[in-house]
Amino acid sequence: MACEDLLTACFFDERAPLAVPELNRERALKYLECCYWQGLCWDDAKRQIEDFLKQRGVPREGVVRQLILAKTLLQPWLD
Image 1 (tube, rainbow, N blue to C red):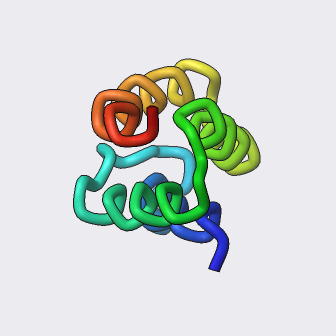
Image 2 (image 1 turned 135 degrees about the horizontal axis):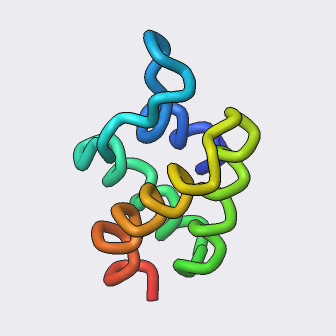
C-alpha cells in the first residue's frame, strides 16, 4: 500500500467531501509510519497531502490550514 492511500482516512469525510475534518491523530500516525518506512521527508509528505487535498477540491485556504496541522504532528518525525 502506498502512503498516499492512507491520506483518505486522515483528510476525507465521506459525509461532507469538501469539509476537511480535523486531522485524526491515530490515522495520521499510520500515515507517518508509512512515510518513515518509505524514507520520505516532510517535503515529500507535504507534497502528497497538498496534491491529495487539491484533487478532492479543497480550497487553497483549507489546504494551507491542513498543512499547518499536519506539520505540527508529522514534521518532527520526518526531518
